[in-house]
Image (cartoon, rainbow, N blue to C red):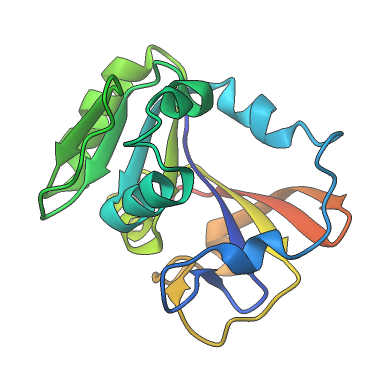
Length: 186
């Protein structure tokens, strides 16, 4: 069981632009048919954590409140935790728990719910940083897009040095570079 950050980033290290949009990510050419890396990754996921901004983007972009069956298509019955300090809309039928505060006790609940599978930290960067602060991050899966944003939501607003990370996999999907790092424990 591992806690894994799987995300896309711009060349200059942002996961969303200054308007919290991901539209820039869909502009580049990628192999939409042969790449199974996300499906392979998600098959090993037993629990999901995301921040409020990520959750709201998914809700709005995919119109999940109006079309809740899409949640099941994307995430199935995988339990999800959304870290928020405000009231958010619920997706009917989705297995989502809204939480706030320290990530460590929630991580324990997620591990129990995951049933031996991995935990996916879906975003955002500050939330993932809190898992880093507690030594709870095991892997970082990055899809690097051929774009620079100049500003926006940072990939991971924490310092991790070369001694903290081990590059374990490199792949290419047309214009995208895919990297996997293992976080070393100290």
